[in-house]
Image (tube, rainbow, N blue to C red; front, side):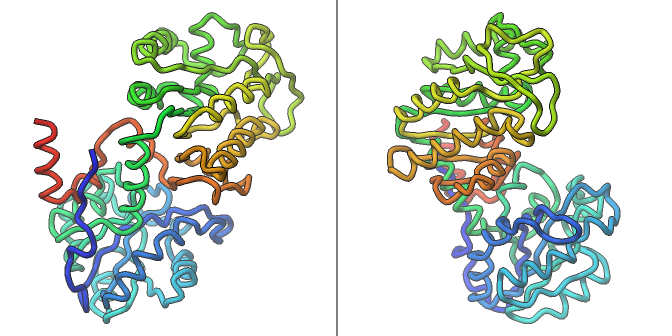
Length: 411
């Protein structure tokens, strides 16, 4: 079902109007310096549109996980300069997001100005979606624009609460993100292959149950594959797995047959006695994992089997690494699969969609980001969308016409 969102164009003239713009500036930093500005760079089209309109832009974002109070290490102040560099435009900074300091900074804005408010999570009212906190944020602006798909699975004040007080619209990045994901998932070219990995089955249960109804092939890797291998009676040594979900794994394997979805588990794995950089390791079949062995990646023959499936696919969705990719050489399978997907995408043989922090990190470190059809910078929001869940931050932006159309379709 294609969502019809309220757009920036529907806001009419924004000349000299104050726009509260919710973005995601939660970028990786080291010693006070931004290491990767990709998320900031992707926001530029929305900023450019608002600047061309002559709007007064009030930027709202969180950073890190402060506990509802000021934390110098989680201040957005250092990011103001990076935002200014990306936009090639001055960015003012307010030392708080509400109160006298914020109000004074907002009152001083003129058409074409940009003001970044301090981290909204320095106030408990943000995560609690406190009505008074939402109302104060909304009081600064004439229009609210959400341009953060990555945070839209959170029913927080600066994402959901303010939309109850202001005319609201989706930013250009949010529109692009949803459109790109929907174009792949709503009517995918078949055969469709979904690759999922990560540490725990418990975090991907809804994804597995939703996507195996749509996918022709479902590849399971990472530590979560260990639970499935255990369910099928394979020895897994001292590998990480979830004993309480072994029965659920068997159930999913049975359900996949009814859905006519081919679940692919690794036939060969890489094992080591401990998890550390450059740990001594060996390759073995899944029936030969030693008692003291820990499965940390899938083996080259398993990768070849996956590559054969990819070569016969038309659509590929990837969420979750195949191994403990943070530790070399246990990133080998994930990198090999990234290269295979990139190659097939470049040849025009598949449409590829990837998302999730670990997968995005693997793709970027391999220099392959430009060779995927679309890469989502969202983490939890991307996962919940794949699970078929409604995102609160998106739901509040659905236009009346879109909501009515949805009711007709579902009736």
